[in-house]
Length: 348
Image (cartoon, rainbow, N blue to C red; front, side):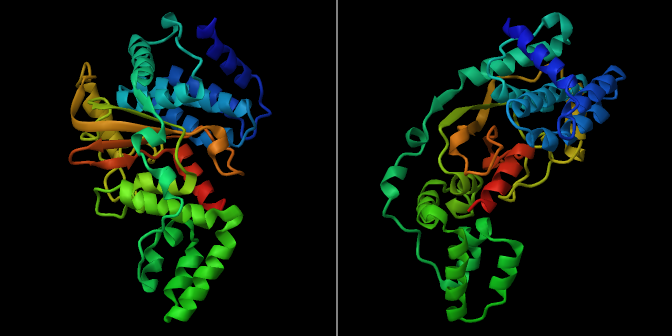
C-alpha cells in the first residue's frame, strides 16, 4: 500500500484548486510540459510554486511541498541532471518519510534507481544528537562571548544577524561611545523577548569556540548562523561526500562564507553552473557513488517545535558540505532554508 500513497496525495492536490496560489494546478501544468519534453519550463513552474505551497496549512502544506519536490526530481532526471534530481529527492523524503518505494513500471529506470539510492543513502547515514557531535553546549550557561571594542559591535553577530538595513545604517552614523551604548541597549530592548539576549550571547560564545577553522569567527560561519538563529538541531546526520554530491563541477553563487555554493535548484533557475553541470552529466553514464577524499556531508534536522514561534516552515533540513578546495561546512541554500533563516531573524 505504501507505494501508492504518494499517487493518492498527488491526486488530491490536483483535485483541489482552492489552494492559495494553486500548487496543484502548477503540478498539473508541469506534468503537461514534461510530456512535451519542456523540462526547463516544468522545473521553473514547480519551483515558482514553492512559496505558495509553503503558505498553506498542514496537511496540505506538506503534501504540496512533497509533490513539488517529487516532480522537480523527475524533471531534473529527464534532463540528465542527476545532482539536481537527487537534491530534490532528499527534500521529498524529508517531507514524506513514509514513502519507501514507487511503481517501477511508471517511471524511467534512471529515476527509479536514483529514488532507491537516495532513500538507502539517507537511511544509512550516521545519526547523533547535537551534544554527541558538538559536546559542551550545556556548560555554557554562564559563559560570555569574547570582549570586543565598542566600535566593532557593528560587525558582531548581534547586528549582522538580527539587525535590519536601517539598524546598520543608523549604527554606522554614530561617532561616539555614549551614542553606541544607547543604540545597543535600544536594539536589545526590541529583540530581548523571553530572555533571548542571554541565550543568543550564550550561543555566540559556544559557536565562536566550536565552529572554528575558517577566516570568520565561528558564530558567523554557516553553521554558526543557523545555530544562533534557531538553536541546536534535534538530530545530526553525517556521511562521506560522494562524487554525486561533489561541488567541484559546479560554479554557483557564493554562500555567506564567500565560498562558491553548489548550484541547487533555487540558486536561480538553471544558472550557468547548473547548465554546465547538466552538460557534463550527459557525458557520464554513471557518477561514482563511492566516497571521495577529504569530503563529508552533514545535515541538521529540526523538529517542528524547535523553530521560533511564528515560523510555519518547519520542514527545512540544513545541509552542509565540506570539500577540499570548496569550503568547510558550506550551507546549501534553497527556498525553504533561506526562508526559515530570514523568518527566524525577524522573530526575535
